[in-house]
Every structure is written in structure tokens, then in C-alpha cells.
Amino acid sequence: MTEASVGRKAAGREGMAYLESIPRNVVTVYIPLAIIVFVLLFPFYWMGITTLKTNEELYAYRGLKALWVYEPTFENIRHLLFETDYPRWVWNTMFVTVTATFLSLFCAVCAAYGIERLRYKGARTIGMLIFLAYLVPPSILFIPLSIMVFKLGIFDSNWALILTYPTILIPFCTWLLMGYFRSIPYELEECALIDGATRLQILTKIILPLSVPGLISAGIFAFTLSWNEFIYALTFISSAEKKTVPVGAVTELITFDVYNWGGLMAGALLGSLPVAILYSFFVEHYVSSMTGAVKE
Amino acid sequence: MATTTEAEQVTPVGEDSSWYERLKHNRNWLGFLFMVPAAAILLVFLAYPLGLGVWLGFTDVKVGRPGQFVGFDNYAWLLEDDVFWLSVFNTFLYTVVASIFKFAIGLWLAVLLNRHMPFKSFLRAIVLLPFIVPTVLSALAFWWIYDSQDSVISWTLIEMGLIERPIDFLGDPNNARASVIVANIWRGIPFVAITLLAGLQTISPSLYEAATIDGANEWQRFWRITLPLLTPIIAVVMTFSVLFTFTDFQLIWVMTRGGPINATHLMATLSYQRAIIGGSLGEGAAIATAMIPFLLAAILFSYFGLQRRKWQQGGVDD
Image (cartoon, rainbow over all chains, first blue to last red; front, side, top):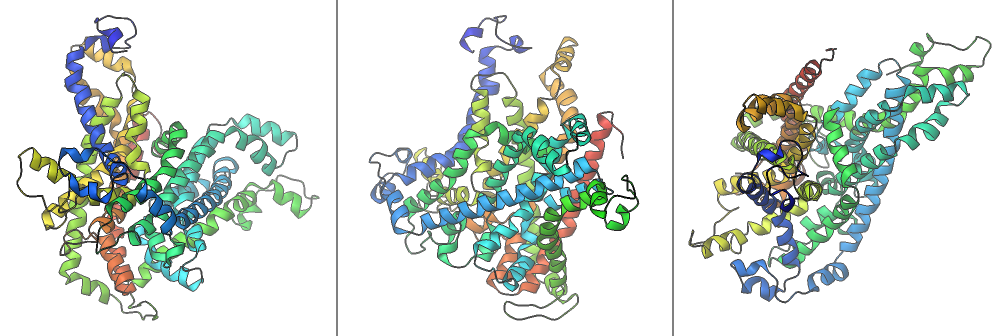
């Protein structure tokens, strides 16, 4: 598009874009944009490049030369996958994340349908309370929750996380799905009611199929939130083989005598990959869920 | 919440039908049923611990030892605790500075991304990466970037001849504060930028065209059109941003653990330090409870932000 539109009135440039010249755009748009994007992406690049370096190379070059890897090695990744608990942590995180996400989606679908469609007495108030619940941060809940988790006998088990993560996920998913359900015409539901369908049938046969994009959005966002969760997992899990990826990487991969930067960065990189891959497939859903929650 | 007593007032079905039939068609009763799963989890694992946390703040409970009610002892103790006040100061500094930068750079990035340009959707997708990648893991990358001996920033600056010795990013109190704030800004920009971009896209281009015909320059268009129309969404986005920055734990815990000499302790990290590491659950809960008034203030701010939005869109305030 840039080359085609060198001429000020060239076809293909929309709106008022013809008022701007290319050289001016380079200074006011592309250079700032390039700097911001560089800063936003550099930590990931550095993560990746460090992962591929041998320990000798890591300390051999220190200036600009360090920005490239000359003798790439997969030793750090091999060590991580075969000589540490890392695969266990990935499995734990996956199990906890998927279970918590589906549990939250189930609860959120029911709650959102109730609030938005059944409109029982006080539904608005409950909707507002659920929004407020989204604003309660884990950092003020982890102390009382740790006592509860201990008393319930689920301390240091996956269940401690599966039952507590939904407190973060349900408010968000409910709020998001309420918006989706609102956009489905009432008439569809009324027809079904006249035809003798029960509320449960309406929910599963009409509302849910129509709100698949919303369910995916909520599911993806919930998955990412619980994959990234840290403070509950740090507090409620103590044994090494039961940890999640974020907690395991911080507590078990850091060896304070000799910093094993290659191994640590390999852990960070591999731990980021699942959410990054999932995100790359559902960018639009993800963005709509993020902006949807704010726009409501 | 709907109860059966309320439900009995609305019974559309004839008297001869069974109680089951009646319940099946009663909105309030059905609504109650649909709310049960979510309400059960939220009441047990959110509302109850919230209350329990406030109560714990008034007790001297320790790990493995039930506590007793001690009134305001924890708070009296905290009022005279310099470290607590330092953490309050740090929390405010962290929140205010990071939020200002997140807002300014985020808005700038949103405006830049709102133009027509090649690879726009690809750019938008990669800009969000810092937000979706686990914070803890990117904090590890920052920890390495901020290494006292082998920081890539230090070495690049040395090579350019700007400094002579590596910068001690996380060892010096003020450097450490600046470093963690920069990392937090880095993580927060995408959220602000992408949500504001969504807001920008709802502004009609014809407004800009009309303003341009009237002779408004780019700055005037930004100040007189973009900013006023974006204000409601800015209020909401920034409230979220402030709330999550204020209660941040992960970045600090990974990079500094509150050090050096408590210079980067936030209220959340101090609360973890005292309650879980130190074992004084009561004192930690008191610190956590002390955050609530600030959070409430931010939520009220958000509430009035939302109200104003309805009014601006021509809706009715309720």
C-alpha cells in the first residue's frame, strides 16, 4: 500500500490519508511505532536468544555481538525437558487450567443466562455484584484462602487451584457472556417457549450455538488468566512435583550459587509458548474479549 | 438473591398444576437455580475469604496456631512500622508513575495503530504479546536483562561509550524502583493500547473530516475530538490498570522480592512476606486489608466514569 500511494491522490488510500505525505509519516508514525514495538518485543527476543546459547557463548560476547547466537544449541531445552520436573509442571498447569476454565465456563453460562434472560428479581444487582467480584484482587484473598485451603485438606493439591481460580474467571466470563446473550433476539426464545421447550433446552439448543464466538473468547481469556496465575499457586502448593509452570520456573529453576540463565530462559520461553500459540490462533476472539469486558 | 418466598408471588400457571410444573415456569425460582453453581463458588471462595481476611486482620493468628481477637493491635503496630509506610509509599509511587506512562504511551500507540498502514492486524497482534505471556516468565527475562554484571542494556551503553561501568539496576534502591516500574509499564502498555484502540475505532471519521475542513490541525483534532470522545473508555481502562498495578505482586516478587533494603516492597509483597514467609498471618491480613479503602476509591471512580458514559451517549442514568 505504501508504494502504490506515493502520489497524493492515489487510489487505495482511505479517508483523509491523502493529506499526509510519506516522509512526514515516517517521522511521526513509523519511527515511533518501530521503537515501541522493538521495546515490547525485545525481552522475548532476548529470552529466545539466551535459550539457544551455550554457557561459554553467553559470557564470551557482551556488547552488540551478544544480540546474535553463533553456535546455537538445544542443550538448555533438552536439560529442561529431561532432567528437571518441567514436564510435570506443564502437565499440572494444563490440567488445572483446563479444568478451571471449563468449570468457570459452565458456571458463567448458567449465571449469565439467568441474569440476562430469566431476569429474576434483583438480577441487575447480582450482575453488578459479579462485576465487583471481578475487581477483587487475589493479593488480598490469598491469606484467608490459604487458611481455608489448609482446613479443607486440599493444601498442596491441584484441587486447591482448581477451586480458587474460578473466583477470578467466573466474574470475567459471566460479564462477557452477558454481553453476548444480550445481543441474541428475544423472539427466538419466545418461539421456542411457545413450542414447549424448557429453559434448559432453550439454553443448550438456541442460546449456546448462537454464542459460540463469545464462548471461545471467554474460554481463551480464562485459559490465559489461569495459565498465568501466580500468587495462589505460589501460596497453596509446596511440593516441587505439584507446582505450576510459573511457580516452578521461579522457585525451582533459579539456583542461587550459579545463575543458569540459559536454562531459566528456556523455562520462560517454553512456558510462554502454549498461551502464545493459542493466542495466535484466536487473536480476534482474544481482542474482542479484552475490549468487550471494558466496553460493557 | 431470589428466594422461594419471592417466587410464590409470581405463579403464571394454573392452581391445579403440580409444584414441579409451577417451579419449572417460575422466573425467580429458575433464576435461583441457574445462579447456584456460580454463586456457590463465589460465596465460598471469594466473599467468605474477603470477610475472613478482614477478621484475620484483627487477630494474632500465626501459621499452625489459632489466634485470638486483638482489636486494632495489628494496625497500631503497623502505624509505627517504617517498613509498612515505606511499602505504602512505594505502592503509590509505583501505581502513579506506571499508570501515567502506561496511559501516555498506550494512548500514543493506540493512535498510531489506528491509522491505515500495511500489516496493521499483524502489528496489533504482536503488540499484545507482553500482556498474554505469563507475567512471571517475562519478569524472569527482565531479571536477566537487569543483571548487575551482564545486563544487555549496560553492555550496549558501554559499547556506545555512554557509561563506563555496568548499571546496578536492581541493587540500588532508586534504580530498582525505576527498573520494576519500567517492567510494569512494559507489561501494561498493550492492554491500555488495544482497549483504547477499540474505543478509537468507534469514533466516526466524518468528525475528523468536518474538523479538517474547518481548518483544525492534527493537535486540535486530537484534543477537541479524540480525547473528549475517548474519556469514558479511558476512565474504565485506567481504573482497571490502576487496580491491577496497585495490587501487583508477581513482577516485584520475581525481580527483587521487595529488596534492596525494602525499597521495592509493595503492600501486596510485604503482606506475603509477613504472612507466608514470616508466618504472621494476622499481620499480613491487616496489610492486605489496608489496601481495601484504596481499591474502593478506585472502584467508585470507575462507577462514576461509567455513569458519565451513559449520559454522554444519550442514555439515561439509572
